[in-house]
Image 1: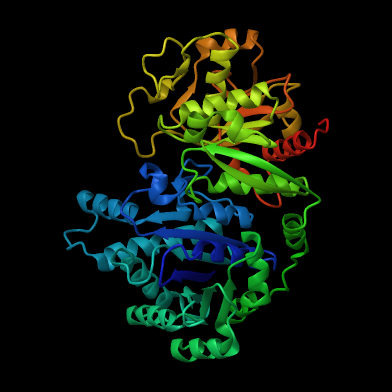
Image 2: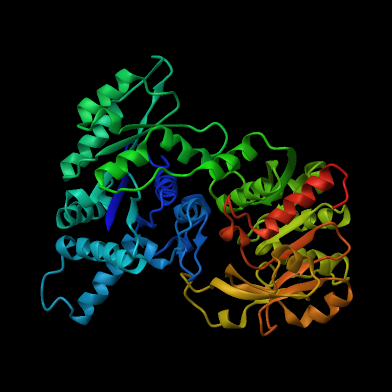
Length: 537
């Protein structure tokens, strides 16, 4: 087993997760079995109770783990199937250590950060190594070098490297080389300081990945090499990409990063075959078609709040050789200005998941606009509930129909809390989570898109379609295209007399990859393109 640890310095949000995922792509395409892992230093047990403003989206795995969004990059860039073992937080570590102390597992010893907290972190590395049986395990350490909460993780990997030996471990440090406009030059001092901080802890990186806006010249690379004690070829340029994050693996390949990793870890494997990846990039940069799609949400100002949704839309474009311009629409703008002004001219409308009452009426207006104007519509989780409320109000005649989440006094709660949630008091990790089977209706558009009748999709919700209204809405034309196998829960709805109107209670965006676009997104973008160009689907 070989171990790669990815740390970051200078500032947060440098792209450590993307770098780790891109390296995983290259190593996997060399024929190696890889696995990826993320350590998050915050004290939350998981990000499930955190606001998108704090943390971006919560990425859900098959086993129901609510995890960091970087795990989405890991799954999209590689073929790895992740579980709760692949994401570890300080909250989980301290909770485990304290539970052991209460049980008396430490036999009267004083419980300390070293060795008990660091030991628990190392145990998770070994646990995943054993479970994955991978050739290479890539572990990303969240946060920035120097953060006090991240120190136990850095100490843990320093000790771990001593145990497994230098030929089995590689440290990669992702740093920032800023361009100072007034001086007209890139500056290496922040990188030098960041690496010095890491070396104080006892970790010396073998590769330094330099995030930058401008190319690194030979002189700058020599300077970083000299002052950071790495070989000249170990200074890797990672310039801002021009079009897509999926260009990063090809960029790192040009920098020979994967060659250097294999040399250091004594991995004898062929060069990566990246022709299929290059074709994906070609379809993103120079697609045969183009379309504009609106995403109507409440966290539109945040790039990471709907990260997986945006990526899945792009994947749907790749499947159709179609460049997609994503128009971010604030639901409250629709409430103020009306859907006609905001949504006119879009090829398709998508409403993603979310929580809270803000912007709900704007989303309902958007769903109505899509239905009445025959604009392709895809609803995800809350987006399905919105479509149901809109249909109940304006087609089935159920005045003031709503979700019990937003209006507990509604006379028609067409969306109600799951029975299993009624006695739940704790918020963390208690929703309906993870991969659940869905049975698709014979003859439905969804079944045609999937090419199957039983699928598994990931969930994250507390509220569900109220079965008391199933018969009435079905009579009015709403098709229940997917249910749980016991038919107790509605998973998918669609309208048959519409070019494309599908909404799911689950989150299909979590299963989409650039080389394996999700069927619902593939179909949605195809319909959006045909609608935009007035072509029959």
